[in-house]
Image 1: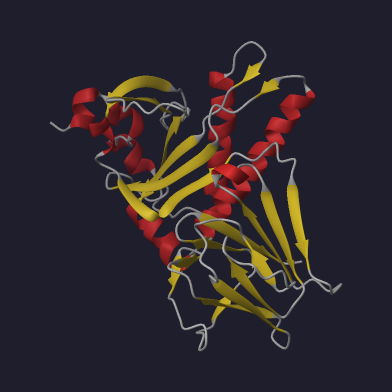
Image 2: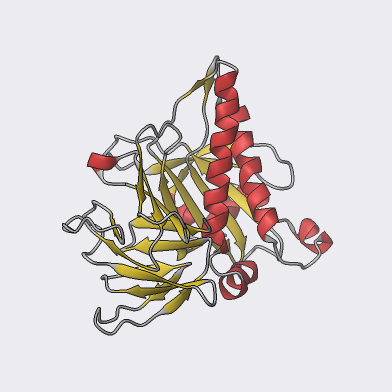
Length: 312
């Protein structure tokens, strides 16, 4: 008997045989995943809040069927990152409404964490959820996890202390890990503009570095070709988007706008660049390899610095 059955959690968190037979074998849509994350965020507020204090989960482990997950990676590449960012934006809107009601809204952590995983016992269309408060400031490694399971069958949360072994059945993917700083209360927003009035694209990043924690950096692309560079960059030209972080190479990448096509292209010179969960391989700065950069894309530099690219 495996750990799931022995602990009794399999009946809660995994679909029963009875439920399996009733399910239509269809995949998940992006809208279903988005609404599911919002649903669990709202449920966490209802279950964890007390007195005048609004409390909510900061870590979300969302589990899918293996085929559903692979389909997202194969045919909907990059959507997970967009769904996560849109979900967090909606979280902030919900929390702002509570503040208007004079509720105390303070985070229990300085970041949001999303882990999108799969499990072999899930059928097409199945979804599972584990939420965690993710408190910061503790360096002690806990042997047990305090986890809330919300099974699909009942919708009733069960909070338990469980051993780390409970997570061994899940398959984690590097493409499915997203970590965003908590940035609801941004007050110092730096906007970098070029001299031209025509904006070709808008780039946005939030600094995770300790010295810049909570600051959002926005860059309006007004030159047909720009360079994204790091902390050691000393040029002040309008076509230079300097991100003052040790995690960004100097220079790290270039973005070019093709006016005829109305498209963006990207070339990477840094150690590691991911675009919509696909690696962009490093090229020579004197002989760049250009790849198409769709609008509403997510760029990740050295696994730390995230840049969102939007239409102007």
